[in-house]
Image (cartoon, rainbow, N blue to C red; front, side, top):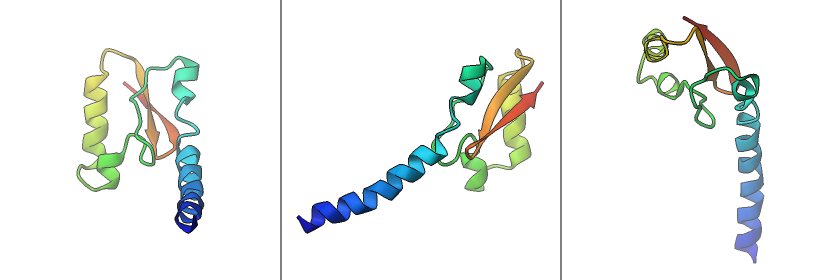
Length: 85
């Protein structure tokens, strides 16, 4: 019984953080703007946050992948950002 209470007690804050960080992830979809699918906690900047790639290089990659569109939406952690081609 104690283990169940401990797991439940630890799960509630984790779920709260998860839902807090994904609360804005439908922003671009609701506006009908093309967007890059985000990852919980990191948005689209996971590789930048983990210092695997420089932010400028990553934004250039997004720009190149979506050069047929006039703009694309991304997520910086849980904030929405707008990239104009």
